[in-house]
Image (cartoon, rainbow, N blue to C red; front, side, top):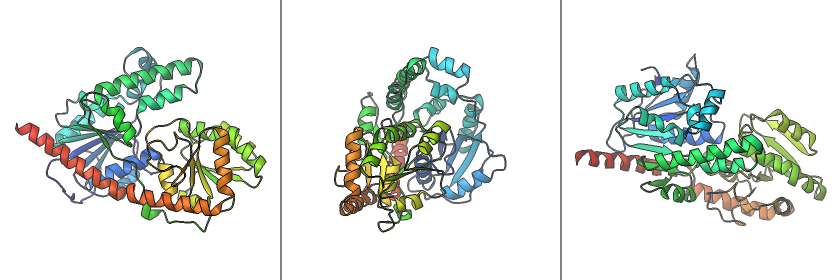
Length: 420
C-alpha cells in the first residue's frame, strides 16, 4: 500500500483493530473550518488506534503528506487518490435526474473505491469513519463488514435548503432538488451507520428523528492553549470578519454586512472600521470591500491570532449555515467579544448577553455593535465569560475524550455482536 506512516505506536486505550477514515480532501494545511474539525478528529482517532486516512488529493513529492502525518501524530498512514473533476455537465445531469445528489456524483470514482477495498484488505480495518454523509456510500460499495461512523460537519440537506432561499431561477430549482436528494440520502444512510457524530444537540435531535439512528454530539473544538488572551491589544473601533471566502455562507454573510449593516454603523460612528480576513474571495466580493469606505480587505493571513489580537469585536453575520461555527470558538478562545446572528451561533449553548451577543436583522445587529463599541467594560466582561465557557467545554482535549469513549464503545459493541 502506498502512503506515508510514522513509526509511532498507538496509545491503545481499548482493544480492537485498525480504523480506515475516508474524506473527499486532505485537511491540511489547516486553514478552514472543515479542515480544522477533520484534522483534530483524525488526530484523536490516530492517537488511539492504527489509522489509515484515504482521501482525494495530489501530492507528487509527498512533502505535504509527510508534513500532515507529522502534524497529526499517532499511528497514521495516508493514501491519496487522484481527485475527480467536479460539477462536470454529466455529473450535474446525474444529480438532477437520479435520486443520488450531485455531492455523491462529484466524489465518485472507481479508483477511490478500489483503493479503499485494498486498504481494508491490507490493514484488516474493523472500523470505518466517513467524513461527511456523501462519502458513506463507498463503504456500501466495498461491502465493508465492520461498523461505520459518519462524522457530519453540517446537516447537508439543511445547509442546501437555506442556500436555495437566496437563489433564483434554474440555480434555485437545482439547489432545492439537491436539498431533497440529500435529505433522502440522509434518511437512507443514517440508520445504517453505527453512529452519526454531529456538532450540536440540535443536529443530534434531527438525525435521531430517523428511526434506528444513534446521534452522538462530538462538538467542534479549539486549541485553547494556542489562543492567548489579548484584551490589551485591541485597536479602538476595529471590527473583524474572518472565514473562508470561497464558502457561500461566508460570502453571503459578508455581503449582507457590507450592504445592510456597515454603512449605518459608519453614519453613527465614522471611526468604525472593518478588516476582512480569509482566502478565496471572488473578485466581485473583493471589489465590494474595496469600494466600501472603512473596509480593508486583507485576504489570507499566516496566523489568525494576530488579527484577533487587534479586534475590538468579531462579527459573525451569517444567514446560511449548519454545524457550529469554529470562528466563534476561536474568537472567544482569544478573548474577543462576538456579535452573531442566531444562525451564526447555532448549536453553541452560549448565553446571549453574557458570553456572546446575538442579534438578527440589520438594525438590531448594528445597535449591538455600536453599544459594545461605546462600552469597553462590557466588551471585556463578555469576552472573559465567553473565553471561560470555551475553555471549559470546547477544548480539543475534552472533545478527544468523547471521541475515545465512542471508539471504545463502537468496537466493543461490534465485538459483542459478532460473538453472539
